[in-house]
Image: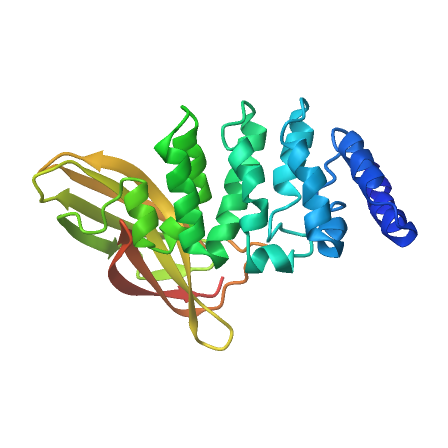
Length: 282
């Protein structure tokens, strides 16, 4: 019920030339329902002027207002218009993240991590450098914020992001798999595959083990999507085996097309495989 009120505040304020008082009102409303969408027209209208108020929210006693400072300035906030200036250059909003990455509220820290993840999609080097700066003087919660904030870069196999989180792309490993147990998968059933990873080096290896499904599109081409398998440490000569079931149950957000598909492992950003399998109709 509060959502249209927040949107009306933004529309009326910009039409009538009322700026800072309208932002203050959104800060009062956001504990009832987040105003993250309503602050974005102010940022698009005058980024520097809006950020001058939003930066002060990072010191607000209410975690909903502090979260609004981070969430409202996300360059690629889902279901909301992008902020082109911050997509091009995220640095004006970095002081907000610097102020909030150690926030006592997980609700706020989660938003900071998602904001950092947005930055990583367009500016990997800035995202990694920001996380490295935070990890240089960490709180107990900082590693979790960095991991969540760099998750897209880790899935993409970005070497500097992996190294920062302790996953050496050059670790000495022997990887077997994926060993596909179901070369033909009926729509609605599961792809089943096994794998084995051995640490052949002299030091303990911290591993980020993912897998990639190359889905068939309507035009016959393949598009990749990375899924998390596990994160674990292997001592020298230790090995890890596993079995994964991946569902092909139809989803409203993804349409499956019968035909050739592909699966591969990704360990510390390095690909292993791939192995083809066939998806059939229901």
